[in-house]
Every structure is written in structure tokens, then in C-alpha cells.
Length: 124
Image (cartoon, rainbow, N blue to C red; front, side, top):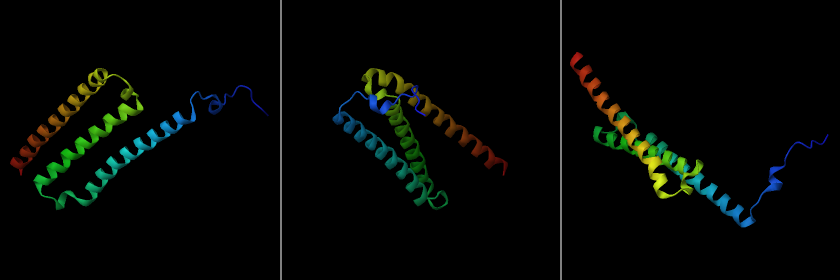
């Protein structure tokens, strides 16, 4: 039975083959960048377990995770939410408050964790 209410979107595209190749290339680039960042995070986590790493190096690893996560989140917003196509001013107006807020939350988490850690040291 043939339905006449189903629209075949693949037949209704409005771009040339060159534009399609360009879009597919962009998709592969985005996939590669996000995969590489994720692979770096996983490899660092596997190669440097917390119990085998010095305290100073562990702090560097934690902050590198935070930075990589922020970079990945910003890239996802730029690409998948089409913010990358907007003007530079609009990008900064949207991304900078979120980045500042995330850094503030990270600061609060680290400060409070150190207070709690110092409190537990005095109890034991």
C-alpha cells in the first residue's frame, strides 16, 4: 500500500553535490575532533591512575580534564547548536558567561573540598 502522506525528504534537497561533500567533510571533522579529545581523556585516565601519580601531577591531570571538558562542550555548542555560524560578538556573549560560571563552580567545589578535607584531618 502506497502512502501519500509520507514526504521523501531525501528527494527534496536544495543543494549541489559540492555542498553535500562539504557538509559530509565537516561532519567527519567534527567527529574526529571530538573523538580525539575523548581518546586523550580516556588514555590519560588509564595511563595515570590516581594511586600511582604524585599529588602535583594529579592536580595537573585534574585541571587538564576540566579544560578539555570545557573545550569539548564549547565546540559542541558551536557546531551542533550552530553558534559557530553567528558573529564573534554573539558567540562571546553566549559562551563567556557560561565558561565563567563553570569556572566559578569548579572553584567553589575545590575550595569546599579542601575545607572538608582539612576538617576530616582534624577529626582523625
